[in-house]
Amino acid sequence: MSVTSVDKDLEALTLTLIADFDASVEQVWELWSDPRRLERWWGPPTHPATVVDHDLTPGGEITYYMTSPEGEKYHGWWRVTSVDAPKALEFIDGFADSEGKPVDDLPTNTTSVQLSSSGAGTRMELRSSYDTREQMDQLIAMGMDEGLVLAVGQMDALLAQ
Image 1 (cartoon, rainbow, N blue to C red):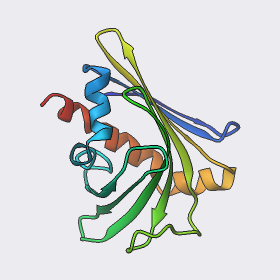
Image 2: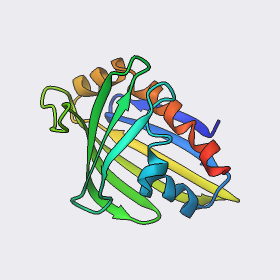
Image 3: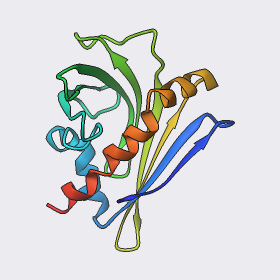
Image 4: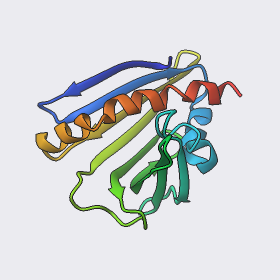
């Protein structure tokens, strides 16, 4: 598995995942920048994603839903705040209703992705930052950290193709 560490820093209100890949920075970037490739790994294997809108530019939005084994759809959105292709991306991540509108009573987080050359491959640092400890605790209780590890664990197979 490509995930080498997951660190929950309760004081800094961050969840940081580090993953190492036997692929170039550009190849890993493509898994974020290509909506068809993004939906093949974003979300745990039991809840595959379908990307509806994909505007990977500052101010752009990405909307998607994950489908459970029972057919339930869980909608989400990203509001892209910065892009430095192929090295970095930052977005606000939140939940949406069935029409794709943001759900106000569930927390959001800010996610930053950094890609850097590491030996013959690429290191990805994915850091989620929260406004409050309560928000962080709520998302972790919903399984965000475990789901993220399972999702990123699918990237190796895509990079091998």
